[in-house]
Image 1: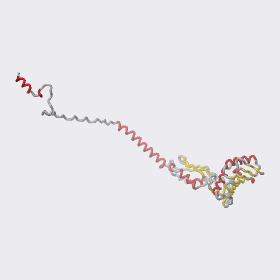
Image 2: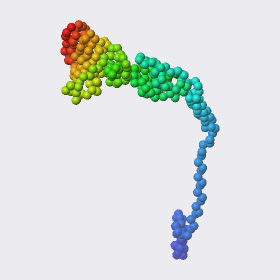
Image 3: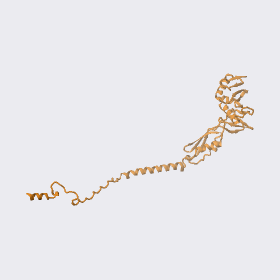
Image 4: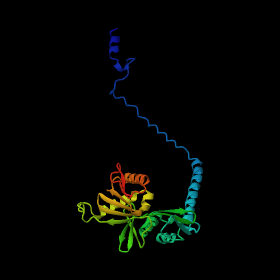
Length: 284
């Protein structure tokens, strides 16, 4: 019994059932196996769809290029849309031929290439009587010029001629004969106490303001506008009648007051509208 006991104690612990061998006991580690290869990425196969869709796109682009090229040729290169006729309307003192000569539209040029702004500027620069001009293309072969002439509201006598002045104070023409129904300016403000403050240009402005505000029936009967000072303007009417106007202020109200006075006192020779709320008529 004692010998058996000794044999059991000498048995190594590694041989005991139920226990695994300890690390570092000299047993070799199992070799590592090769890493599994990564699966290649899948790419979608290129089908014929994209190639088929490019066809209509390229055809549309080609058609657009041909259309633009053809349109450009029609507008600029062909003889179809070129200037063949230029007309002028709206003239009163001037003639259409004078307007056409000033416009100098290049006949035969492509209609689309005509610079209408340049034509308008040229007409106004060469003909000061023109207040406004509108140049338009009249497809397929024409250019139309619609002009508006300045209208004189006052005349300034210069030697034996007359300088025409419009309602804006623009001196636009000199004529040998005074147009009918346009009053002549008589400026005599040299001895006025306000001469230093109001020079000739300012007094001319006041006279133009008065003449331009006159109702049409009164303007036709006004022969002269006399300016003695800024607030001393007198109108001379036909039949030896006179109107004390005062300054150019409230000219519209003064025009209405004078219209009423002329109707109420048709035989009066002197009128005063310098205070339009209290007009007066006297004499016969």
